[in-house]
Length: 333
Image (tube, rainbow, N blue to C red):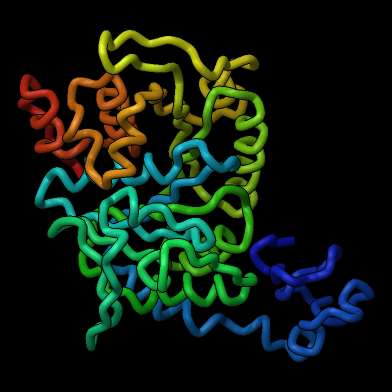
């Protein structure tokens, strides 16, 4: 059974909306969707998908950033990855923040006070710089203190709008920042991008077993819905002293950490990013950590991971800014 075909408010043993038993099995009794499923309407193609596929035709690469556990630095990693790509003014980059209940991307990028504007071609992303656009529900809230208390269908509707109504233009990379877990938002993105194609997912973890447990579930999710796993990043891997630059273990990898998990599950280990307190400071102030602290071991770790990701080198300008000695990098993207 395809997990993407199960509504968020379905009973425990739902056969799936695309099943021949949809609306007819014993499990469907009392379900709010029973009449719709029994009518066969759920087997029809979603009318949004052709519109989304057309809109996404101008996006070269679509990458999901996933984490089974909250608080592992997924959104911070997404922001640093975007800044690194956008360091080359010829690389057009976008971030779609689908962490609807906890949209932190606007704050991390220093654009929390901005608003979304509409034009004849659709919603316009909020731009951090000329080649880095962002779309997030955070731009639509009256206040940063307002809670988003939405059930699945409303979340799904907003994600559909982000994909089909936002005028992303020509993008080299669209990074999709997702909430923790494997729930409505993840299933919706996979469903809507089925025709347009997802190039892959980057999984974020921290060294402790409590985080690795949830990442194992995330790996299982990706394999069940057919998402290519680009690789695993271990965040907060050791602590870097801002003064002496030495590194020490804060979160001990009691079961081998991300590297061992990647080996056990046969996925690529992209690298480990040490915990530098200035990463949090940069996120609070909405500035690029890579630009502010190019001498940090964490900066080098980020750039090493970007070089590993998709087996492509990062943009030439990004490398030349931080490592002037590297002059012969060719961006094959």
